[in-house]
Image (cartoon, rainbow, N blue to C red; front, side):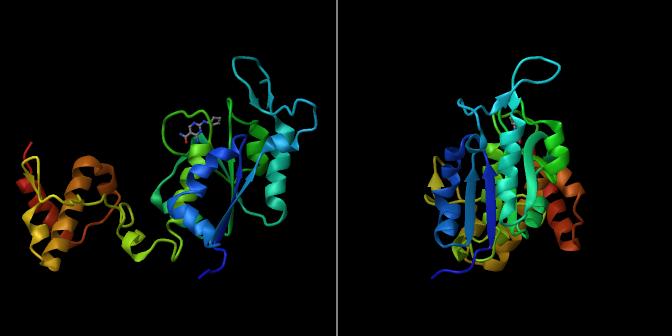
Length: 250
Ligand code: 4GT
């Protein structure tokens, strides 16, 4: 069974082979095989003219490190846009930190162009002229933007309707409703003397769902209080959290 194309990504990178880590495995690999998702990779090196196929250039003002050469990168961006225009995203530590809300918005687009920089990055005028959105994985430095581009491909793809099977559904994931996930347990029932919480063995699904919601609230309060401040709690949630807090020691 196959369905229509839901989104296409154009990854612009000097290391297009890196993307096979997402395109040839797992959820994204299957979505591509089914024709729901397309990933085109565009190498700026293929748009060079000189004998050495040069893709780097020196920074004005001097200093260590190189930048990506302007013309091959700009031609790659234009090539990505020529069949179908799409939102252009540049991955860098100067970008806004990616969160679930942004991924949900990106999942509504038809075509995303993802620029993965290398060296010290790209010329500022290319950002002004071509980039719609500058995004970051967080406050740390990578050798290139590829891992960020691959993170977007993976995270957007798993939100597309019918990409995940029922067993792996995205509706219960962390962050979908602004809370962290509850703890999970599998066999054995006792592992190194530590038991699975008895409620999970009770067969009472209403009680299990209530316990899981309480764990999600409690763990968010403990590990990510910033998330709780951004979210209103219902009366039931407030009571479940207060009970968690009153039982919490250390
Ligand atoms: C960190 C991130 C990123 C880099 C991040 C341009 C040349 C940026 C190297 C690239 N570092 N990219 N997307 N935190 N480095 O997302």
